[in-house]
Image (cartoon, rainbow, N blue to C red; front, side, top):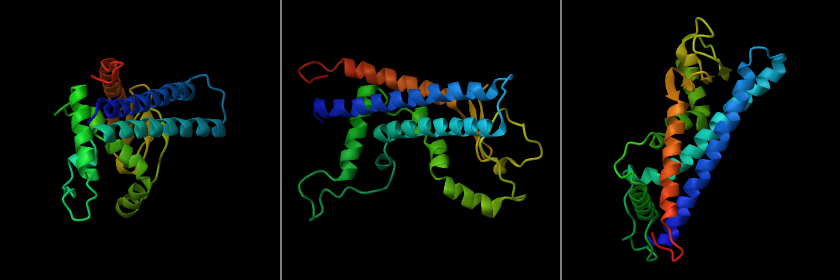
Length: 213
């Protein structure tokens, strides 16, 4: 891949990283307002702030997922076969080969070849992105048919609740996000984001005016 094209991908990683940073900044601001002890806000206002918290989390995870797919696309782990040699080929590399080649070169430039980086994991984003399917599963598996979501606060705030009935819960004090009993650290994801952004900017800094690394 020519350096110019590689730079385009790196710039997109940088852009997605900055948008993820903005989402976290907004999350911190809104969560602080929700948790403020002397808050004099009514139920509707609190509910609006809670929803904004989870909107920010979703935005953060969406941008992380975009970064993840740029660096670790599904094609590198799937069994999808190359179709470059098929009779219908137009002489260009098929999408599978293009994707795998792009991933390999980006990871090499960023020094992430073979790394089990936290940004690679898209589980939490998938939970939120495919929320309809998670509700389908809850409907068929919930013992008590309780359904609770969008709680901002520490674990255990609601007693007698099966963990599988808690769909979305965020604790600003620990940076922990819980989804149906699974625990995810937004702090660790943020550290991973910072690592990728630093590597990306270092790589972009090596790109000279002549278009070479």
